[in-house]
Image (cartoon, rainbow, N blue to C red):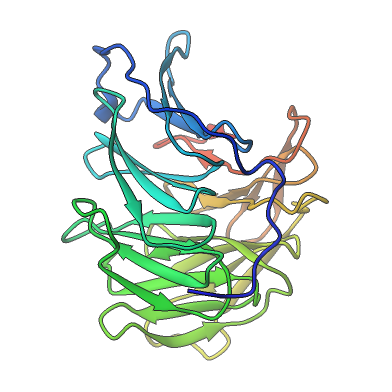
Length: 299
């Protein structure tokens, strides 16, 4: 699995051991917990309650490099992580222990997603130019797809029949998961694509790129040839060129993205009007998420 390498952060590295946290009586499946991944070499992830004093419910350590992406399992009892140490990991949130260390990539793993329907599978994208497919019950990947370029963003369609990928070639590829081949390509970004997320109604795809724009794309089966819907400006990537992520709110009428200028940026989806630039951070905001059911933003 060899491909042209994407420049990596000097912070990648360092080693820590897996530790068991004290058992908590907090129900992590009620949607009131948030995970925070590190962007340095400590190789851990934090779990915080999003009510009361926002207590730290646990620290999951064990990766030997920076944690670059996190995804919840469907029942919210397992957390999946991808890391610069070239592994995917699954974590039991009741005990705080690592369930399994998933191996198969040969370079930094930048991104991760979980299927929404059918059998639960994971997909991951790496600097090795491969997209790996995982059964969480197995240590090794069950399949992989070669792309030729480092992959920095992946997202599965709601139905699980299509996969969206982005990388340093600036294009978004739409894959048929059954045939494992590219159906069509979304072109328009002029730099690395770092974030992909389908809309809540499954009709559009949101992307963010190091070109400093977020964009929406029509992903309906019989859409026009030119599938770009809107372009959103106001969230520069910054000199660090981190893997900045973007997201929809639950209604699909607003989108948000991190930014290299230390702000979280919120737009109206339909008009592309910039609504808010939320300050407070002293460095790049890597990810922004809307709280389920309301307009609060977590960054």
